[in-house]
Every structure is written in C-alpha cells, then in structure tokens.
Length: 170
Image (cartoon, rainbow, N blue to C red; front, side, top):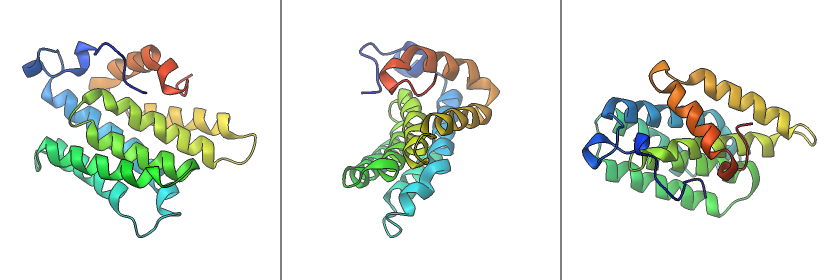
C-alpha cells in the first residue's frame, strides 16, 4: 500500500477541497511518467509485445497536456498494472510504475508509487548484492528530474511516506 490512510490535502486539487493546482498536478504526473519510463525497458525486455505499460506512460503524458480525459489515463494505468500481475521481479515492478504514473492523473499521490516501483525495479534488476546501491542511484536520478515547482512537495512526501513505500527513499 503506497497511499496513506489520511489523504494529504497538498495532493488534492483545489476544486476538490485541497491545495494542489492543476499545473502542479500535471507536473507530478509528468515526473511520475519520467520515472516509469526510465525503467520501462525492464518490462519490455521480458514482454516486448505487451504495450500496456508504454501506453499508460503515453496516456499519463497526454492527460498532462490536456489531450485526454482523466478516466482514459486511469484506465490505461489499470491495464498496465494488469500486465504486472502476470510477472515477477523487475518486469513486474516496472509495469506497476507505469500504471501508477497513469493513475496519478486521478489521484496525484500515486506519483510516489511510480517512483517507488521504479526504484524497486532497479533493485530487482541489479546484480546480487548491488540492489541497495542501484536503488539509491535511481532515487538520486529521479530527484534530479524533479521540476523546481514540485521539488519540495515531492521530497517532503518521500519523507512522510517512505515507510509505506518499502523505505526506498532512504
């Protein structure tokens, strides 16, 4: 479970009673898509003909550009996560990362799920004994991709939810 029991109003859009602007929501989804795309090859190397995770990432970006409805991105995320269920290890985590990126259009807090699953994918793909180190490098890479407008929000979210995200953000 990567979502907290109590929703953080910073990840709820203003129109739904929170404080998240549409532009920051879009940035969160784009960052999540970037995190997921970074590890997508770990899925595609195992399932090259299954396009569901790639489509989910594409749909997340299309939503952020205002080209599709949230429900379309959310549905693509569900399909990517269905692709994950059939697998194990790095490929499974990479597909879940793509799914989380797409469903972040619906619930912005899923942005951290995309990042956490991407780190889990890298850890799982690393040679024996190098998983923790590979995960820390991936986390650093992800943080380098953060737009300034959402940097502190995401970093604070990582601190707050690290325990329920498998402690991948240490």
